[in-house]
Length: 98
Image (cartoon, rainbow, N blue to C red; front, side):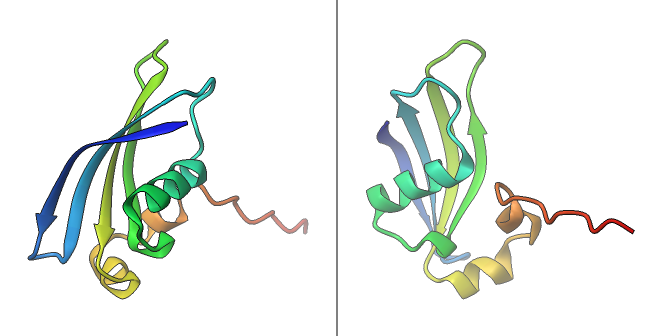
């Protein structure tokens, strides 16, 4: 897969960079973990300081647009962002039978 950074804007108030990227060269829509790893290698950031806001792939297209925030630190990300954004893409805990 190939990553192209479309725009990158600094937001000093929230201590983050707001990134819009484009990913091409895949057959099926990539998972959130795959996208996060690609963006982390491209932007040279920590995985826990990256928050994927949206992965948008139009029907039938082989290109996906990603909106992501890259924070200066993981602590800042956890203070600013809502908790469910960090849980997306992780497997759900198995239900315990009664």
